[in-house]
Length: 387
Image 1: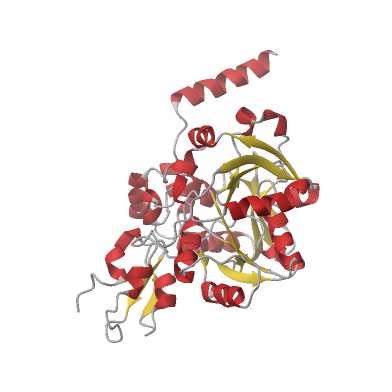
Image 2: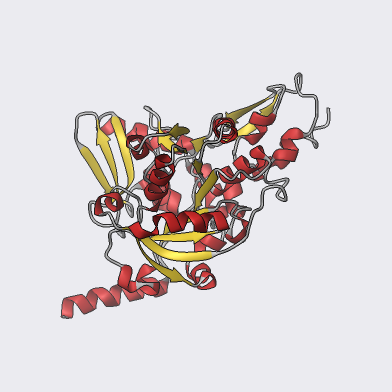
């Protein structure tokens, strides 16, 4: 049987959004992890009837049915609550939106940690449950059957906030097939999806040299927002705090050494977000909105639809915010527009990586600062010593 009418024809452009598995009425598709640590669809050809639905619903293959771009407003913003802000990766915007939805009797879908510190999508309908969905998780989330659960909630008249990567939101929109008044979607400015295998290997290494890890916070603000740490909580009630500039797993992620192949040619950048709201770290705050910079976390907030503006109006009294120019933000914030770079380094990484030498391989491939940046840094150090 020819496979050019199935999801198999997507190849490495696949984002792992899972919609093909969910829409297959014959249950012919499973997602299996490859040797690099990424899940891809595998078709049981003895069951497949070659109906083409998996390909037709794939957001990489079919964009027209899910693109919903109306308005673009951009703000620098953060939550007025110091506690919410400290417990969030950047400015604490998500938790405000989520609370507002739950207060209306709605529910929130987002990424949470499993006991083994893998990540999966789940549903939360209480304010206490929101903590599970807060904070960035630099591991691909398994959406499971949450697209279907979300659809059922919407059909039952519930208000739903669904959060995820841009490609997961695209998958959800394609699965639903139409707009729902009760659905609010939120994605984020995405650097890329790192390898689940590399994460498991790194976790195993730390546990071998310390003790079992009970939780991880990839965005600890113990030393501020700009110079955040990765905090690993051990079962013996001790912590390992590693600077984001020194943690091998995070450095490798940040240098794009082991991202999903589709992330190097992402189809969901700039105007190709299918969410109502897009959030991200506003690292350019020092340059573009210095009055808001206090090193506690500032979000970049994109309102992509009329629905997003309506929800923004509901929560803005709990925000400190400043309007920004969209095009200027895109110029200054590289990941809004561009896919992950250094595809060549990815190949080198997988040539050298054997599952237990992450520190060594990352150190050898680590992207060095440009000469201009190094000179500037040296001048600043000299200036500080003199004065």
